[in-house]
Length: 300
Picture 1 (cartoon, rainbow, N blue to C red):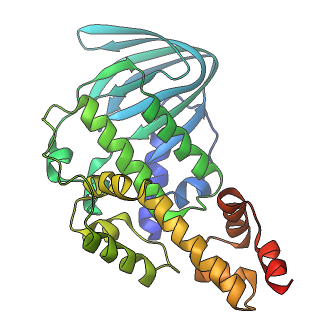
Picture 2 (picture 1 turned 90 degrees about the vertical axis):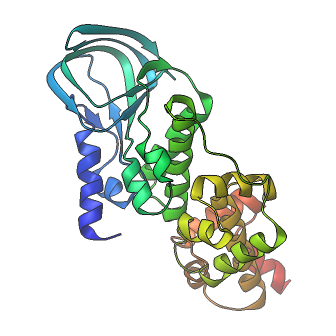
């Protein structure tokens, strides 16, 4: 990602902090993130902000605590009393003022910049062009899980890379669009990838396993848009594209650990992991072992 793009992502995330609250994510962390702009904020107990202009839809979730709000629009006033897990989508608008009273509250906010995803070939023009209905209070466990996965990935320094960031962002956009989009959903393609389509995906992964793999590249290899491809992959192999690629990285790393004496740090780089520690934690999580144990077992 270019310096100018990373700075734009960081600025967009900072603009989500309309109330001047404490960010739980640093600027360098936000600059590394390659998904939809986001913010993770420690809410102030009592804040009044005037003249808020929202240019693109913004999604906000109360990650912890409780909050009460009064939001003054032109000609109407919205009042909210929400607890952890409550989600709102704010359409482009002018808020004359917003007053929040919070108790031990944290917020996760996302700029629904669907144009950003479209430019990467990850969303259809139909999804980008369809306006969203405003809904200031609803709950959805799927969205909540994606939002928390996003901020924890950024807080960890984005070790899982671009594919994970794009997969989470596309999943979030697709779910929001299915719930609040004003247009009907596009026709779904087949229920699963054909053997030939999956083989093409595997070839694309194998040829670039030592580098970040964009979701658009894999979707293009299969011949689908990114949202459809993600669904079909899950139906075909039982997991997301990111998890499937991660399995391939682990398989290659295990093979190199057994068959060669290459340094573990070098194997991590060759198989697309952010660092040796990233490879180690992934092996522990997925296989219950470490690179050192694999090497010692081979020698034994």
